[in-house]
Image 1 (tube, rainbow, N blue to C red):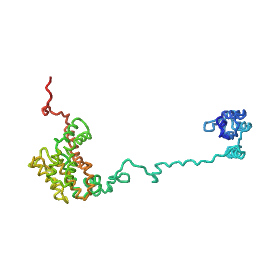
Image 2 (image 1 turned 90 degrees about the vertical axis):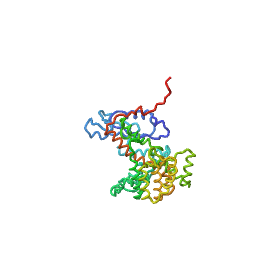
Image 3 (image 1 turned 180 degrees about the horizontal axis):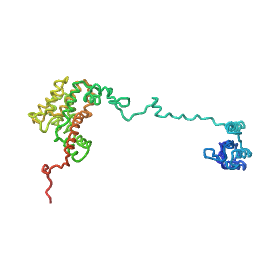
Amino acid sequence: MRFEANPEIKMLVCLGEVGGEEEYRIVEAVKSGRIKKPLVMWVTGTSIKFMPKGIQFGHAGAKADANLETAEAKNSALKNVGVIVPNSFNDFGEIIKKTFNNLVSQGKHHPIPNVDPPPVPMMYSEAKARKLVRKPTSFTCTISDDSGDELVYAGHKISKVISENYSIADVIGLLWFKEKLPSWAGGFIEMVVKLCADHGPCVSGAHNAIVTARAGRDLMSSVAAGILTIGPRFGGAVAGAAVMFKDAFDSKMTPSEFVQSTKKSNIKIQGIGHLIKSLRNPDKRVVLLKDYASKFFPKTPLLNYALEVEKITTSKKDTLILNVDGAIGILCVDMMHGLEWSEDRIRTAIDTGGLNGLFLLGRTIGFIGHFMDQQRHKSGLYRHPMDDILYELPSPK
C-alpha cells in the first residue's frame, strides 16, 4: 500500500505465481478501492496444466492443489476487478508499456528524463594488466628485479652472473654500488671480506656470539648478538675513519694539524690505535692491504695521508697505528677515486655508514663459524669466573 500512497508513483506492476492464495489479497484491495492506480499484473504458471498433477513449479516449488491456486483462476479474478491482465507472459512487457503511454497521453504522468547510470569502474587488476593505471609505490628498488622471468642484479641477469662466473665481489659491486667493479677493485673487496671473516674468539663480537650459542640460542640469535657489538670501537670504525680522514684531507689540513685538532676537541681518531698490535708487532692484515693497494690501485692519496698521520701518532705511543678498520675505510675512498666516482657519490657512500657493511659481511662468516664450533663441542652454559671480576662495593654496614 506504500506504492498506492506515494503520489510520485502513477502505476503498479506485479508478477504472481501459481500456488497459494496471496494474489487474492490484491484482488480484494482493488475491489475495495484501496488500490486505485492502474495495475498491470500477470500470474505465471499457466503451463502447469500440461504437466503431471501435483508437480512443483517455480523458484519456490509452488504447486496448485486447488482450483483457486491455479494461474488461470488468479488471472481471471484479477481481470474481473479491473486489473490489466495480459493474454500471456509474452505480452507482459508490451501491456506495461501501453499502460504507461496511456497515462502520459492523458496528462496523468510526465516522464522523468532518463539518467545515464554511472559507468562501472574497471577492475584494478584488469586496468593494470592493460597498462591503463599506475599507483604510487611504497618502496623503490634500483639494485635488483625479480618481477620478470629471471632475477636481475643491477641489469645483469642471474644466468649471466652464474654462467660467466661472477665473483662475490662482482655481486657486491652490483648490489651495493650498482656496477660491476673492475678486477683490481673487486680483488680489494674480496680481500677485505677474507681479512674480516674472523679475528679469533676473544674479540667482543665473537665472544658474544659464543656466549649466546652456549646459552642454547639458535644461529640467528647468536650471529645477531655478535653483530650488535659492531660500533666505533669494534669494526664500525670503517665508515668513521673514511669520513674523518677524507674531511681532513679535503680541507687541506696537514697531518699535524689534523692530529692537533682532534686532540684539542678531545676526539679519538677513528681508524687509529690497537690494543695489542704496534709498530714492533704490526697487524698483518693492514700490511696486506697496503701491499695490495700499492700494486693495484691507480692512486692512494688518502692512504698516503693516513700513513703520515700514523707517523705522528706512533711517535707518542707505538700502538697508535693505522688499524684494519682505518685501512679499509681509507682505501675504500681511494678505490672510489680510482673508479672516478663523483665527489657527491663518494660522499653518499661514506656518510651513510654503508662501508661498515664490508666488516659486517666478513665478520658474519666468523660468527657463523663460532656458532657451529660450539655446537660441535656441545658446549654448556658459560658463566664468567668470579676471580676475573674486581668487586668494588661499599663495605657492609
